Image 1: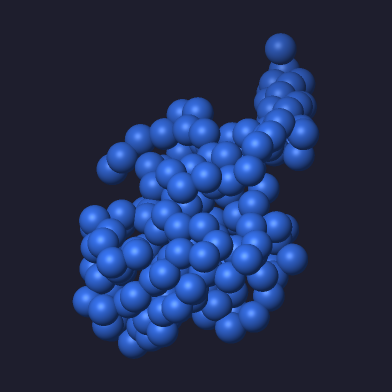
Image 2 (image 1 turned 30 degrees about the vertical axis):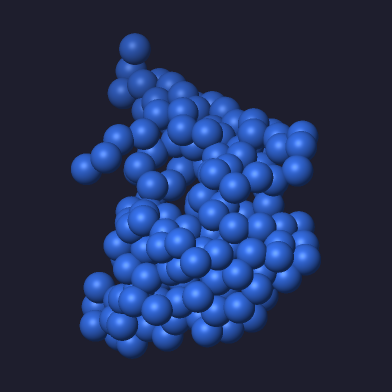
Length: 177
């Protein structure tokens, strides 16, 4: 095989591989997580065919607004196809509508401290973090959490609309560095 044919075959194989990956992402609901909130690697969005429940790990698009703007500006979230211009978050639902949330030095849900929910005053680059003021989770919204200490979650931006949930987050091929 000549050098030119090998190059053409290599490029062709690369195009086919990239096309297959694009199809898997578009139609298979696959996403790559590069954030430290959950294990790095390949995840799949599974259809949620029941009401969301506490304990569900979900993919959710944050709505446009100050929280999404800050996430983009500080690179907490990569750019993506969510309406706010970000990639979806992977978070665990820890409270539903009607639940009382207090934010002190950690998250308090209906009077009980949430494990691994310490509120940070600064992010990893030393920039100030403002916690959500707390309150009752409104109807149609969910309060989200990740046990990663530096996670950008509802501790800082409050509840998000449940309508933004894309589905359950299932690990496919992940690793923890």
